[in-house]
Length: 105
Image 1: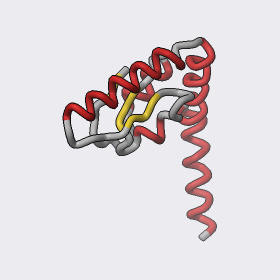
Image 2: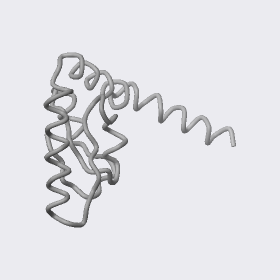
Image 3: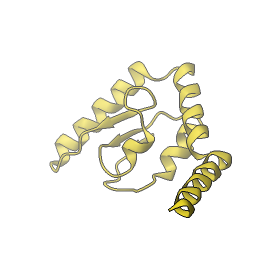
Image 4: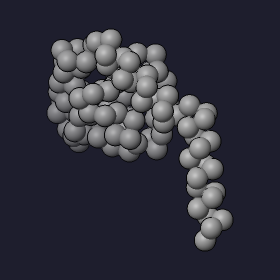
């Protein structure tokens, strides 16, 4: 899965794609690096203002993902990463922790 978005705070397509076993390739902008653990759950490639350099970076990311990350182990790692960060119980626990810290202040 390739995301050429220049900026997203929480790239939902990357989260959903990883949950279903799609290895993402995205630029090193916005929240993409919060979702992708480079080399483990996808590939982060450098953004370039030049369209040819940007395309070459994406192509390199796709080649790297195809060569190194198309495994059951990667799919399992992506699923567990998504589940631990974005499943309802995990999100609720972080909100509870945040509200508790605010109330203690």
